[in-house]
Structure formats: C-alpha cells, structure tokens
Image (cartoon, rainbow, N blue to C red; front, side, top):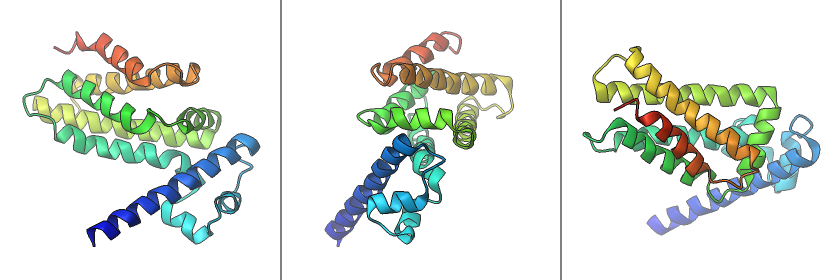
Length: 196
C-alpha cells in the first residue's frame, strides 16, 4: 500500500509539473492575459476538472508553489534548535527556500518575470511576501518572548523579507545566472551584524 501511495504521489507531481510547463510556454508565447485555462488544459492534455484538482485558478499556476513553500517555511523554522540564534535560523531558511523553490528550476525566472509584468499577479506575490513577513514576525516573537508588534520583532522580519525580495530582483536581472542562494545570503549577512 505504501508503494502504491508513493507511485500515486509521483504521478500527481509529474502531472502538476507538466501542467506548469505547458502553462509557462503558453504564457511566454501568448502572454498571461491572453492564455485561458482551456488553453492550458488543451496543451497539457487534461480536462478542466483535472486542472482544478491541482490549481484553484490560472494565477495559482504561477503562485501556488511560492505560497506552499512559505507555508513549509513555518514548519522549517519551528524545527530549528531552540537556542539557535535568530540570524542563523534565517540563514538556514534562506538556504532551504532557495534550494526547494529556485535551484534547478528553469521556469522560475520566467514565472517571476510574468508576475512582475502582470498587475493581478504582482498583487498576489506581494500578499505572499506579506504572509512571509508575518510568519517571520511570529518566529522572532516566539524566540525573543516579545509581542509580534514590537519594533524589535517587526524590523528583523521586515528586513529579512526585503533582503530576500531584493535578492530575487537581482537574480531576475541576471536571468537566473547568479546564484539566488548567494544573493540572498549576502543580503541577510549585511543585516546580521545589527541583530546580535
């Protein structure tokens, strides 16, 4: 039974990746606004019903993985050693996020470019970054025993998200040739001296 579940999960992951690849190709060729869910289904050889098993909307094709990895970030941070310094936890999270979401994923440069060029997607991306900041604020508050609204909590969380966002922008400017992990780590390390 365990092997069957594993095979089923692999098949689902392959189908999802195939839909994402087809959608990205259509977005590049036709533009995001002119690509419909039906176009994506036709290119992916799936039904609309199957599409909605994996995604809630066309926007979700580009933003779902980013949102999922931010959710996973909460579990990752909660698993860090209780006495680990906050900057070390954030650097570890930086490594984890870039490895999972961006490394060896050629679609991500194109996805981020489409997000930046499409107002509706930009709004969704900003909301995801706001949720990421709230997640980091909760983590810093739990480690420092301060209220989430305290400036000593809000500033490190906001700075860490900004460091990551600026790294993504530089990574995009380089067409993915630079290492996002290195860019993000460098940005975070510039800030860390002020947190100790």
